[in-house]
Image (cartoon, rainbow, N blue to C red):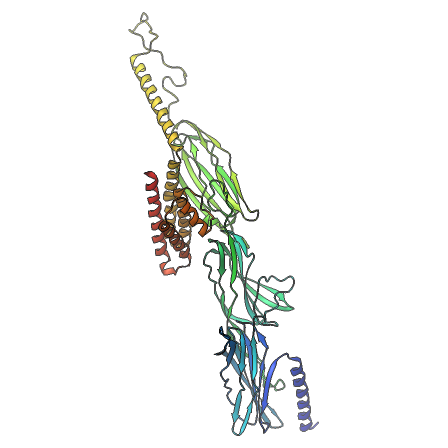
Length: 617
């Protein structure tokens, strides 16, 4: 076969393939050829309609027969949209040049050069993007494309996951099958205060990702946020296409009520874009890998948060989830002066880091102190789990019985929509005499009192039945001391029944235990946890001062309850301002977070000390 016939056959096959390709591709395109036929340009859009925030690809191919290749310059693109006053506005469109590849082929000593340039169009709002004619010139040869239009509409929504996929929630991405998109969704959009919300941030990709993915988490003001382990990877089918998925799950606990918004997550990723040569029959035409940087954004998510229902049992301190209380005593027999350790363990699902330690008290206790406390958090699943342990040492200095009073824990079960209470049984511990102490006065082990001495020595001395004067004096002093102890004990019991005294002791516990713990955490640069503990202490202390239950109440409801109980408007405003300051510390810049936490905790301490003085009057 001659060279001319080979060239003709090659041209025929190329033409047929090009025609079939043009008929098969659902693209919007515009092409133009110079009058001499030596120069041509072709511009195509991969889609006709996109959603705001998505991307469209514009591909421009230039062919030159025996001529130099001209440089392609894209004219300015404009977006035509209807403004608020119903007037037509024209604004510039954002365009990024992704890359350019070149190739050449030779048939019967005729050289043809070609280049392919890829642009990414990034629309931000609804409207119509106008792409003017693209013009190229080499010598006397000139070619240009026809104008193109790209419609930006919110109705161009990606159809979403297919059956059995792990994708949930809305996803506003281009129609068809996008190559890369990001999606944010929650497992539930209506929850109670402090109930866990599972936030899924997922990156879907059908192309290779180069390097690391730069995640910028969404703004979560009004939530306590806990990460759930490292990113998870997998593969899913979405509308018949296979996607590699990278997921970053997080557990969110709302700290406010009402409608809260989880902001948009921003992801920057570099993908490998393959630019095919315009002439697939050329042996020298090789595909080119062009790295392309993409900026993706998920949609914000709105969550409705309800306050906890009224009627919380006494002792409720804001725990929400599914918990279980266990109490362990290390010994049922101790010697006087030796400690017996009581451990209270709270296990379950929920924000275990904010669960307050249950109160452990004993009867017959001379003194007690905290041995230690620890928190373990399990982030391996889709729910935040963990356990909180508290060890209290109780000491009795006198032999007898030490009674560990029942330990109770109250929490709100959001799945059942009700409060739950668990209480342990009382435990009796036998307190033996201290090691080395005599069993009792007199002869060891006799069990009887020693008789009074004889008046004079010898076998003829008389034994008087009356006790000696010293014994009588001792008995009188003992009776007086016992009567005084009964009087003091009765007065103390009467005092403890005074509600004001009980409230003062509760305030003292917040100052000594909770705020001291918050100050210690702030010194260890754990500003977020410290602020959360201080905020709860402020909430409980305010409720003690005004004798009202505020845990789980909405902000407006809380303010109304305080006003009804006699709080002035300035006091309510100052309290809400302090609550907002404590809630914002978790999102403050790292360089000021610790300092802000210390100032806020100091303000809480000053306010609670003022409440204590007011109750003491």
